[in-house]
Length: 401
Image (cartoon, rainbow, N blue to C red; front, top):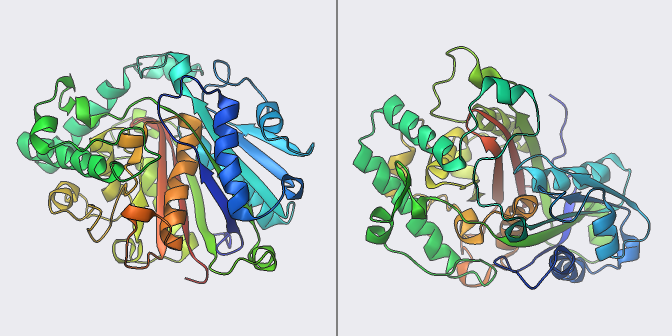
């Protein structure tokens, strides 16, 4: 394996806009809101940024193609700005571009900005055609709830989990995230819900009820990265460095033959194995302090905890019910409220997840701050459907850990 990027890049500053129904604000406003916070946090001027990456999922209906929208909104000094889109992993992809530019020496200071005015697109998660050609010929284009409901059914069958047990575990995921989101002033949804409300909510796609599904929101998030040496020269002391960045993309294997039973995410398992190797993590369950995973649906979070090797395969639902991933559990997950409470503005989500881990490691997360000195924070994106997707994992942590 290549030597990787562990501790070669530090996060100099981050910012995050308030997520929600921002009907009166355009994408430029959201980017500026997040960028202003990140720039002040970094303690630099815009003129010091060498290169930038912009992530947007719905470019044609949102801010348009190319890197120009970010360059104009942020008044970047005629530097290279690259627009990226990689399904729901787009934010992580932008962060990866900026981090790799610094790690290679091509840039001293680089910017990653993710934004999405998803409410303005009219997108509600309903079925849409894919943008490729092959997938339409070999797969059924269904709704997102329908596809992820099949994940729940396959997981139930594979591990012999009683329907009522899985339903309660999924409900616990949602109750936990709503409790966390209620403490976060930047979350879209800030209202706690109880178990009975979740269990008795209208059914969307069996067994996924209304509260098992994340919402649609507007939002933006920004990261500014540099080398540890430059960060120290700018007066930074307690550095948060990048430990690993790994992507895994489906190649069609899940849809061909009988090798995959639909109960897990193959790509996440591949990316996780590589990310831990890159970060030098040998026992994820005891070493990873914080998790932000792609909880587009409650069952996705539950299954992902197994694919990340945090829970034993087939035991994730028990760990959920035991409170292992609660804010005060041994492996807190979505301590900021997750997609469940932030919604899922596609281009922004990956960077928003890194933002929470960054704040927690620096002890700056306010009312939701963990008091046990978090060392490693892992964020995970999953773009696409269980049978064809992009999985992305970012691990950040205390320098030298």
